[in-house]
Length: 289
Image (cartoon, rainbow, N blue to C red):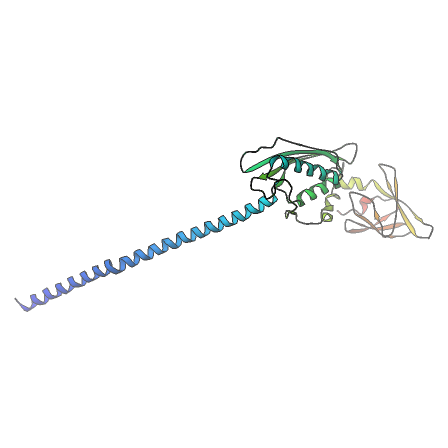
């Protein structure tokens, strides 16, 4: 056999061995390695998903525990009576007149039981604001589904109607009493921070400016000690109010502080805006625009 043929045969044999070795390497090492790598990635993905699900379950369990602490009593009849009594007491404490609370028959089905109450009464805007403040400060599982406010044409009282939903959970921590936990839903924990609502009375006929025109500086006099006093007259009622420097003019729509009194004018702070009111002028002259 010629030498060239021998060399070719040897070269072909060597190439065959290389291909066989490469095939064996891929089959015996690389493929198992890649399979293990893919399996590890899949296991890591399943582990991450399982961890996420466990975290979500733990958060849900914690949230459920918090809700159970705020739930109405788990005894449905007691939940009905205790919460109805609480609503009525709250209405009376905030000064609402002719308050009444009615409730639908409690529904005992399921783990979450809904109780619907209707509250009606009459009150000033200040009393309604106080009621809403106290309601949302309480930590019960409750919400106002609807609210109707109807101003009375003959007085400053407002006819009001609430539809309120309370929830009783079967896993509630209390069987016969309401929670005493406070709520965190309010933007401020101070009722005073909600007083601007009263000075922007949307139910007053004609609005604030027309009402301000009803308050006029009619006189400036001296008291027995020689101190100046200002007389403000309510045109609608015909009544007059006497105010000294440093005092506040009684009014539910405006926050009026008397800063200084001279023989012919009064310096006022009205809702944070300072102005001079002369004799014969009405309060709208210094009302913030």
